[in-house]
Amino acid sequence: MDLLAKLLRQNNVTKPVIDDKNNVVKQIDENVKLYWALRILGTSYVPISTTDVEIRIPLEDLGLFDNIELNPYRVFNNTLELLYRNWLTPLVKLNGLSSDGIRVWAKLEGFNPYSGSIKNRIGWYMFTKSIEEGEVTRDKKVLYEATSTNTGMALAAMAAIHRYKAKLYLSASIQKVSDTLLRVLGVEVIRKPKTLTVEFVDEVENDAKRDNALHLNQFENDYNFEVHLKYTVKEIEIQCREAGFYPKAIVGGIGTFGHMTVIAFYFKNRFKGCTRIHCIQPVQGHVILGIRRIETGMKWIRLVEVDNTIDVERDEAIKEAINIAHHEGILVGLSSGAVIAGFRKLVNEGIIEEGDYALVFPDHGFKYFEHFEEYFNKYGY
Image 1 (cartoon, helix red, strand yellow):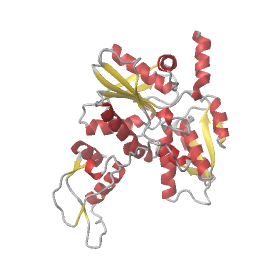
Image 2 (tube, rainbow, N blue to C red; image 1 turned 90 degrees about the vertical axis):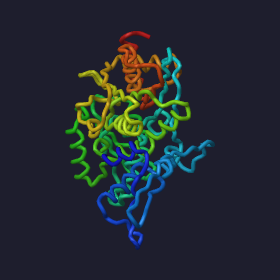
Image 3 (cartoon, rainbow, N blue to C red; image 1 turned 45 degrees about the horizontal axis):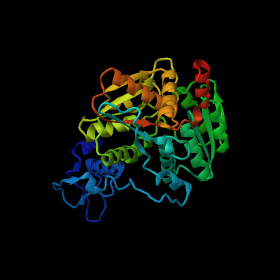
Image 4 (tube, rainbow, N blue to C red; image 1 turned 180 degrees about the vertical axis):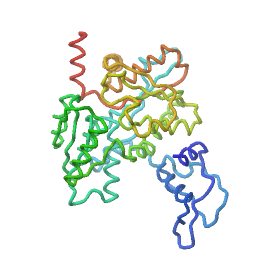
């Protein structure tokens, strides 16, 4: 983490990886750390030298953005390419939220195909890496995972594509439509009469060990961090450049693992604190699907700097998801509604100044009709 942060702050590499005469990278601790740090950042090239020399090569010259490809004709050889070669997901200006010198942009992760959510990224990457590392084997052909729906749908798609079986565990609080959606994808659904806690995940881990099943454990898997560092944050930077601005702040929800963790890590280091990070969480005792409170134990969020944590009530999130549909014509999920509600609170508190702001909308709203219906029954249309 320290070396990654240093590279992003410097925006260049000042030491090469030392190679011996046999073209084998020497196992010097700092040498190996530099090699893997550049790999995790997703650069195309690693500077290599036979001697320890001073250099200064910008990260972009090493191909920092080479893995962010544009596919203008949108032709794909298979449905895996439909995911990762279909990135970048859109960044769109929301005129209904923009006013008085404040321009608001939304990163629409609902354009991902399998689950209509940002969780496609981690589902694809975790499963792909497990194949590379030999965890997906002929004698281990079942995947177990605890999910609140989106990661489950992404992993169900991975399982279907790779001829794997999947058993997914949902808590009692998850909407009923999730069972149907997951079963359409060929998944066995297990409902547990409890909330999605560490103990819940531990039970799934024990079941997986008992049944010789693959358990990727999205809540602890470091590939969640890596995939957002290689793709998501770089997409946001490139898109902001294309639109002609750097974001004054980025606003997003605190998730089960947390794309906002990586966004905070990347932008706070790369732009030396010039981009503020505002994180949204549910009010104590409220359940907003897709986000959770910071104290519930996400692995990485405590290791990064955020500027504000804003509490949002469940009905506020639903109301704003409906409002954005009425004014912008896009259907987004409850966590996106929470991000809008949190942004409005920041405006009302005078924290938002003139400039451009990026809001991360994690998913599409098609999974949440039960919550919208309940809201209309409660408050009227």
